[in-house]
Length: 307
Ligand SMILES: Cc1cc2nc3c(=O)[nH]c(=O)nc-3n(C[C@H](O)[C@H](O)[C@H](O)COP(=O)(O)O)c2cc1C
Image (cartoon, rainbow, N blue to C red; front, side):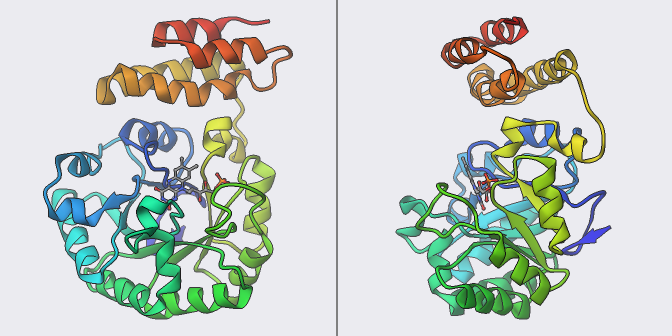
């Protein structure tokens, strides 16, 4: 199937997650049912300034599904220049993503992320500029306070050339709290068929089905990918037992050490730990111990225990 100008195997995507959707994580989800993944949000100013840490975020591998390089900037010229650098460094990106959703003050203060929701003219210029580079353009936004403003902004992005608009059904003021509104996503999916992806509170296969049932072309799994890393496979009807899941995560941790080092691998394993323990009676103590563990060996040992 083709979603937003990209050939994919299914409508399930791994959402962009800053500090998390690094190469080993994207590889893991690519091989466990995600048809498409995102990089973390990458600063175009950092790319233009040759910042080595920003360049590290462009690392990709052959073992990955199609991926969107998600960029952020507060200026259309900077965005386009950064995108050109990203494309030069890596030909594997299937689309340029633009972050117009991040609510964190360190991003919005200088006019990037969700601050762009208040600057439709600049947002339009950004989409047009990126579109001229020849790759599909995916924009991620937040719901605005007023539904008619969300619809207007979404329509403007599509009219400017966006191939896909992902709507996170929380306002910027909500950050990551409270429930994501599904009504506005449903409204946008029927008004702009073929263009809308959904984000917000995707925890279970039933959430995915609900968004797809509204007419969304794709669903972004974000925090739900950590509470249930096998959600993509489960959507496809494949179910694994506890031991098999743990084995897959142990393999992941080895690959994460190889690419990112033991410290980062341990941080990621802590995020995954709850998924192994989540349905187990009396697992609170094991969960606490897992969070306190100081090495991969220790956390794996804890996850291998049963109450
Ligand atoms: C730790 C964290 C990092 C995130 N980083 C990004 C990001 O870099 N770019 C982006 O567009 N959204 C980012 N998001 C938002 C998610 O992609 C997603 O839209 C949001 O978490 C809502 O989905 P959920 O309720 O299913 O988690 C981030 C969310 C979290 C929790």
